[in-house]
Each structure stands twice: as C-alpha cells, then as structure tokens.
Length: 177
Image (cartoon, rainbow, N blue to C red; front, side, top):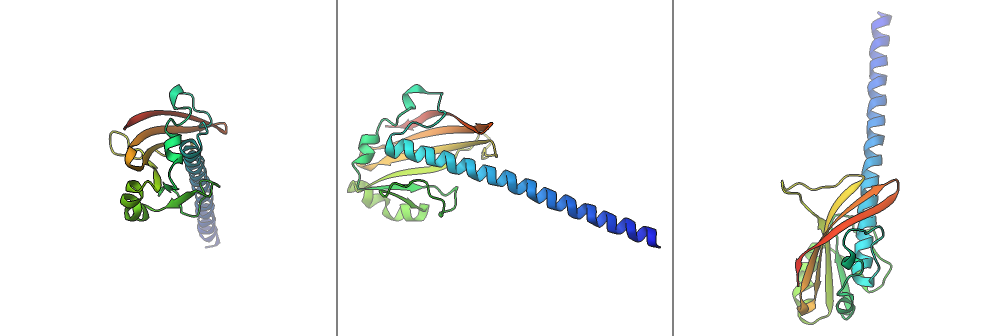
C-alpha cells in the first residue's frame, strides 16, 4: 500500500514541476516578445516623428530617415496608435507625442487632419498571405501607417528580428503618397 502511494505522490510532484517549468518558459518567451514589440514600436516612432534612423536597418537605404518628417513636424499634435502593446508602455519621451487608442483616433482623426492639428502614426501587426500574425520572441512583422494632415499618408512594412541581442530590421514602402 505504501509503494503505490509513493508512486502517486512522485507522479504528482513531477507533473507539478513540469507545470512550473512550462509556465516559466512560456512567460520568458512572452516577455521577450513584448520587449521586441516595444523596442520595434519605439524605433518606428523615433524614425517617423524625430527623423532618427532605425537601429540595425540595413535593407532599404532611402528609408534610413523618414522622408516626410518635416511635414509631420508641422502638426501641433502627434498621435500614436499602437494597440499591440498595453497603453501604459511609453513609446517616446517627446511631450508632443500622445499615445491614443484606436477608438480615440477615430473620434478625433477627421477634425485633426482637416485642421492640420494632428499627424497620426498607426503601428500594428502585419499579416502573412494566410492571414496569420507573424510574431515570436525573436521576430515580429509590423505595419506602420503614417497620416500627415490633408497632405496624405504612407504605409510601410517592417520585419524586426533579434539575434544575439542585436536588432535587425528589413522594411519596405508599401503604398501612399
């Protein structure tokens, strides 16, 4: 009677260890994916609104500096919509940049664009041909849509990868003015 009881206790202990280890591995991967999303989103915000090159960007030379940054800077407010990250994660220290939700953007977008009081940057996941999101702890595919007043807008697609702690980026202009 004692032997089967020990086997059951041992099996329950082993299952408990597997659950704890599995949870820690999942959380670690989730945390790395969140860190990559935040780092990639911050790089896009700095590229669009402040004209800073995206670190590790090696694919398309003409996109090293956002070409319409002067148009973006003319707006009184710079709005960033990035629903892929929790609202409490800051994407810039610049006081002119305001992070808003998609619903808030819909409410103010028409007025802000026509009065030239706001420029918008929407950052979201890109989807592959099968309609799936490409995101892991080491790679993320993002779309950036820039709307600058009545003057138009542009769209870009980026693939951010992290290898040995280094951020690598490829990207392309996918449409717009």
